[in-house]
Image (cartoon, rainbow, N blue to C red):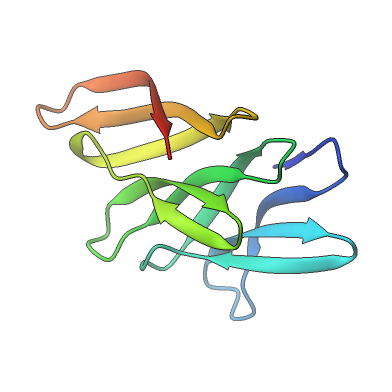
Length: 116
């Protein structure tokens, strides 16, 4: 699974060298860049806009999963709505991320939009 921007950049996820887990990546101008994580073992990139901003989710240090926005070389943890997971599914050209998250009272909250 991956996504391609209008400028030809590609994002997705791939096994790391150990083969034990996956990391999100950006492929641009012949170079594949590991985007890392927000502190956990894995990350998955699910969408990218024309500016090269990427969203998806990453494992956090507490083992929960959080949506992220990768922009200008930095991965930003978008947090949750009080539950233990959130997922970034799309990012528009203004950098607004949409996806879903579990709320504090375990309700699924679709189409949450976050502007970073």
